[in-house]
Length: 255
Image (cartoon, rainbow, N blue to C red; front, side):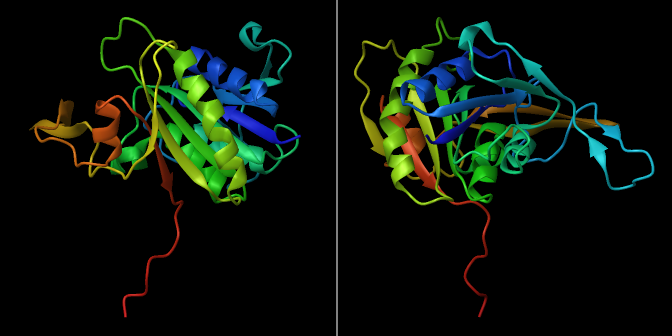
């Protein structure tokens, strides 16, 4: 049975995490859950822990707190609350911290879309990319809920995940896919399209003010229409978008 790690960057208490775990179980995967004890959004592929403990006498060693949990929402599935960013959780899993190393790392379902090249900063995507460089397959999943949603349709995203999993499993280890799903009720048919990465996405973080001792950041919508065929454009048109992304590797030689 294919082993799958379920993680996220919204934390162990996220309903999106539970929906993703159920999608993996319904697909017949052997599931283990390990997620941050607290929200770790924007952590990219950081291998940092929170509340870590230095090992006495070793300048290069620390201990990451891991707590075994019983999740009523996913009864019977081994689950761990980890004082670490999702990238580090994926790395720990690759080294057997939660039992057998996973063949799949499923990350999400994130509250909010992860679009364009700025997925570089996403903890959701960072966990999937970390899986890709550690001989596993990774899938980052996000639900486009916007800023003030009336509801979170996790089941819609979970159903699309079940459609994507056979494609992911059919591809070689190291494959990493980024999936975004519109926040529509499950009874609404959602078509899936492959997409390129938009240059930014649908919003951009920018500095608005710099005063002595601090800078202030804000998130603003981009003024231009997204590029046709990009994940931002297709998601805005109501499609679920799937993008095959590449973990860190060398580029073409300079000469």
